Amino acid sequence: MIRAFALPLAHPLETARGTIDERRGFLFARNGGIGEATPLPGWTESLGACEQALEAAESADGWNDALAACEDAPAARHAVSLAKLDAEARDANVSFAHHLAENPAESVPVNATVGDASVEDTVDEVRAAVERGFDTVKVKVGARSVEADVERLRAVRDATDVTLRADANGTWTREQAREAFDAFADLGVEYVEQPLPADDLAGHADLRGGEVGVALDESLTEHALGDVLDAADYVVLKPMALGGVDRALDAVRDARRAGVQPVVTTTVDAVVARTAAVHLAAAIPDVPACGLATSDRLADDLADDPAPVEDGRIRVPETPGHGVSVDLAEVNADA
Image (cartoon, rainbow, N blue to C red):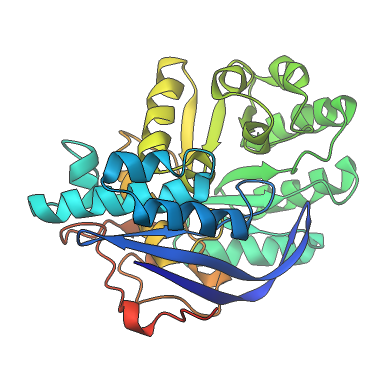
């Protein structure tokens, strides 16, 4: 069964390919399991290609054939593989996390995200996140000069002792990145996400291994995982873009073998995929704070959230499967 949906965002989302104000996708249900496909241009196939792949998967005889039908459509494959794993976990009467790992964590740490803003507003937003219980905050940088962003993060450091991350979204030159890294080292910044353009692996490799880590995200759309791991201290893994939680878990293992820390995040997904990503994070021993506190970016959702953020952490649902109860009859099939 396939059900289409459209969910409005609480605020428009700026991406490299333009502004989006809603997230459109599909639920895929089979054998008692439910998966979600929420494509995002630049990271996955288009909405139309996703639907075609899911229709091919729906008509396939078994799980293997259904997965094969989605081989070139990562968001569609995410939905099918998630439905399969969800069904298996329900049949085994275990949570999704316990289906993925023998001893998963009961909760996972998550970071708050603060956008570009003035010094005063940045400090206020970080303080507000700390008051809500977040130990780690990621601050968007790159829209201003390096000097201005250093001033913003220095003011945050003077005001709080929170673990700081920065996300430049590939906007810096190599010279700007080196200037920022030198300054950020004195501020105790844990890592900078995508400091250089996605295709500049050599530049990232020159930055890695220092006091400020290099976290690569968008580079996974340009290069194979193995090449990205050679240039990173951290790798930001999006299960939807990788083609499923199963493939994301394989990437986690590859990263750990390479001495690179994995961080799990979403592509601003609905509750089914978002909760599955929480289970994935719980299956990673000693996982760093992950980018899973994204439910507030949606103005509406497909079902009640079984894994809300509380004091900077998300408790992993213990019910069989991924723990999301979706009334498929209520999902807008005409979206």
